[in-house]
Image 1 (cartoon, rainbow, N blue to C red):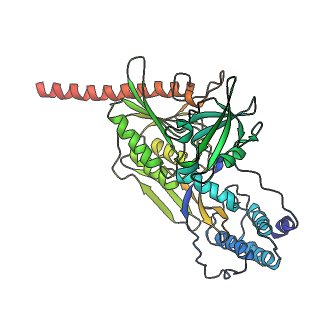
Image 2 (image 1 turned 180 degrees about the vertical axis):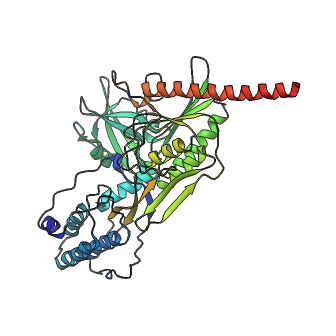
Image 3 (image 1 turned 90 degrees about the vertical axis):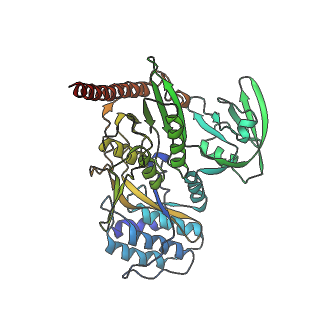
Length: 444
């Protein structure tokens, strides 16, 4: 391994292929955790070599090799070579770290420079400082389009509307700008201002906005009614951030007051997030049984179970697709294996590895694969995904927008709703049959 790796560390290393949000991590912990194993060398106290050695130590102690590319003896040799080089700038050390991690061939074990590390922590915190809009990029026109303003935020209060096109940000032309670049310009410190140039039909507007702290809503919920006036509780979970479990709990409690006959939980396009959030959310639905088990390279098997506090036992269907990943697969797998509900849609992404987020001495960070998770039946879904009980492709004859999800325009939702109605009727027949037998026994 070392002979193949060392040339990568010379000169400017090629940038790693960018990782999409679908392949982001499940955060286990955000702690430096700098305890040294008995046989590992001591940490170097010479920045930027300190950061290189810090990463090396983390891999040496905790990395779970899912690809067979990690050899501990080669890793020991590699440390000597890396620390014998001179690094004049932090960026030189960062490039060396990227090369070191790329040898593991694990897209989830990756380096984040200070700016990217900060953005990642914002994404999982459930809060950000900005103006409160959801953006999309129209691939046909290459325009930045507002999906919707978030209720109660500066954008909402200023009258920004869905389908508004952003043509400038603080006077900078936004034509052809990608979403990440736009987000970096729009976000900023609380109390500072940003002016958006908006195109609404034929009308051009300049809208000044004051940035504030925005709570990222991860749950959308409502009651849908069928043609037969059956009430369906629809809940869409967009990500597993720090607020997701509370939002899910509040949504279920609110919908239960409206007495739905069953639920559709929509996990499509959900890339995952916090491991603990997935366990807590599964507990809202599952009263008894295993939710997930995790195994480290030391063979420790951590089994997490339901705690008897499910908020409802009504029939449910879970919608999944190819972009349901990571924490989404934990919840979907737990519901399927415990026979709590049926999965409808397409096979999930197949990310069964657990990442820990580790801050580094210079403000950068890494995500490192430390474990793999198994569904309650012991299935290792990494790279295989979870197959739904009922296959249902998305009808792509027309473009589906976010506001179409969970409506009659959404073919997968329609399939899920039909499946749920069958389950509701089966449950009702069981109850009626039981009551009839009781009455008959009583008359005897």
